[in-house]
Image 1 (cartoon, rainbow, N blue to C red):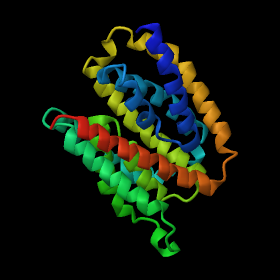
Image 2 (cartoon, rainbow, N blue to C red):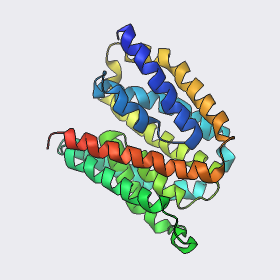
Image 3 (cartoon, one colour):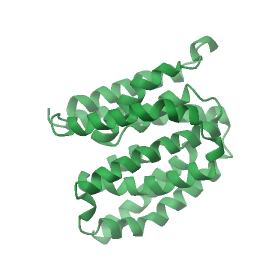
Image 4 (cartoon, rainbow, N blue to C red):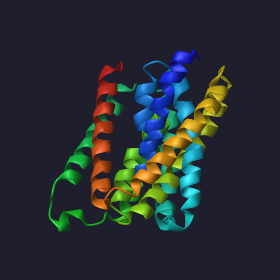
Length: 249
């Protein structure tokens, strides 16, 4: 990788994992659309997965006692099914309409979440919603690495405690990342020239971003942080629509 590209990638990775440190998700949705402006998608996505594995392991391991094991048990089997379906679709479906569908779905839920609605409309989702959210999250994780917003929407309506939500979404993303990393390795993507050396060079940057975001999180009011999650997801949804619009059918 040219030094110029590495110099541009470093601040992108820092910001992406500062966001992750504050919210417990969103690193790939911030990093990948920017990295693909000067790196191949087949290089950028496996690269970010390596950072996800390290950072989610640190966050999830440090806060393991706060992870909702019940939600993990509900989501995990459906996430596996979704990833299996996504791998199958990867060879048969174009990116245009799936990305636009994801973006529209995320925007619709975020608009509803950001509205000042009566308390009765913010009642927790039934656990039965783990099936569609788990399956669709797995599908989009395998296809585009963008399943995080789907898991986030589900867990944000199931878990009121922000620390528990943050720890749980980190472990969900970690499990998804492990499965995808195995698939990428089997496909030979980690045998690309320089990908492991670039990952080693940028890993300290991702950890600095994670530390900065974690420190900032303690200084932001809980309600503001929760609303910022929906704003971030809305931006990610709009980005998914834009990426889908530019993709071939």
